[in-house]
Image 1 (cartoon, helix red, strand yellow):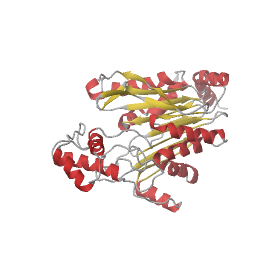
Image 2 (cartoon, one colour):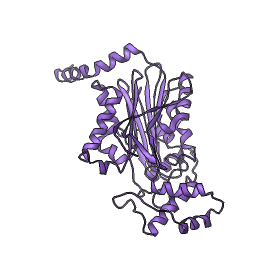
Image 3 (cartoon, helix red, strand yellow):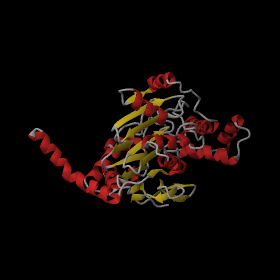
Image 4 (cartoon, helix red, strand yellow):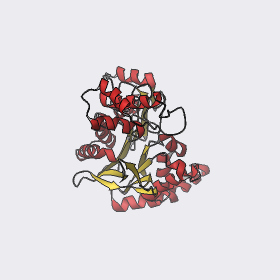
Length: 372
């Protein structure tokens, strides 16, 4: 070994040693964590782990349940569309044992893009395929194409389009938040298309147009052999400019896995995560001795610093991080203490399944307190 290589190797050892020591002491175990919309995903992934399945296959099977769910408007089938009414999906995967990754972005008409990202990783020497190229790649593997826009999401999109027509909202070409105010005239227009829609459904459409979903799903897994993997899949920002790509398919932002240290991922406003390479930064924090909670909070502080800690600007978006260390310690962390929906404050949570029972929700730690 050359002296220079020995010095570089030696420089890494002190930082990694605390993490390795903790992992050796605690011993590996089966555990899956995800964003709050992933309780079923965690349970499915745990079933795969208990059956001896690979960690990446486990998380992909888990998030596929969410991609298939038309009621989750931030992921897969039924996701909120771009400004032209077309659903575009992004996803990434990272496999700890082989240190390989795959991702796809701006994919149309393919529902299960986490699976597609896994195919990119396994069947090519590329990491990312985007747009029409990704659709053709899926077609080559016999993956069926479907219309991803449900009537429910189309109603929300039309409510948003009405707000632009009536001069009551902004769009994604400008700064600010979409702010439609539903009127009897607008509601009547929606009822011409959806005459059987309930008052609750119409109200939901305008609420989503006003406060579009920024959910996504990130899922991370550790098995009893100490192997780790992660995936993130999303329909991205509602009403986005066609072709916009957020953090979810970006290795090191939407997801990152280091087999010797841990894994991390994110949901929420992707642009802010990309600026700080959030998932990679969290894993590096854990490498240097931070526990998962503090590792996430540190990266949230970096995001706040990008806005000079201006609370008024930071209040315009949400972002959450999730971290799973190789010894099984985990955390979820949010920029804000909660979100005001329908007049009350709702705190942020994340899903956990440790194999001892059903998936459960645990509270995220938070950086900034939001008042109701």
